[in-house]
Length: 160
Image 1: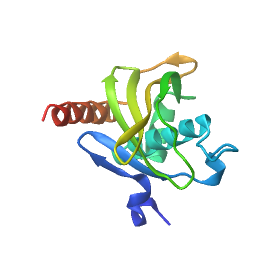
Image 2 (image 1 turned 60 degrees about the vertical axis):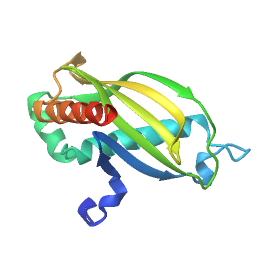
Image 3 (image 1 turned 180 degrees about the vertical axis):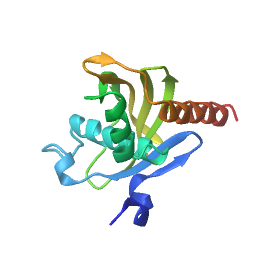
């Protein structure tokens, strides 16, 4: 079954940001029922992946085109700054909010928050680079332009 049959599985775009709902399962928690810190990294990875999907970066098509242009390419997390503000617990419904903070030629800084009922639980900045043959390469233009458009939409939404 294609993603088109279940569009809600990829979250939604709103005001220049991507919002992905995530339910906390037992496997996401530690022995006390609190979300284990590394589980947030998985939640945020899903948010980044679905954000790219919803802005039109069909992964298979993009990867095939990028492979022709830049053999052996990859998106890599170059750095991450993360603050754990409040705990989440089993059965909580969280939202992973992802948006571009800065878009450059070969990298993008994404701001990600994990929230519960609008309250920030985790706040992170993630620098993602596009590399090929061990070197930074420009992010494919359509993807870079889509991220810049989202960055502008988020700025406008924030000023209202």
